[in-house]
Length: 72
Image (cartoon, rainbow, N blue to C red; front, side):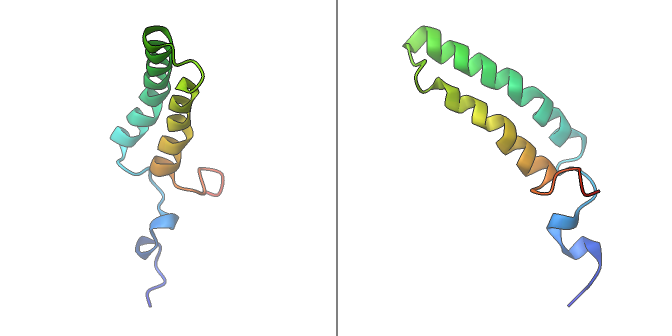
């Protein structure tokens, strides 16, 4: 079994997708807000439209990993 950091996907030093991944994490809050407002105003779905905001932490977890930047 290899002990180098490249064999463990949880030990990566750069964001998944590189600059594209970072851009996606930056854009997702704006898209979530737009979806929330559109569904809320057009379909009257204020009661459940908040679920779009769950995309913000989910995208960050996918790009930066479960450990985040704190341990690096």
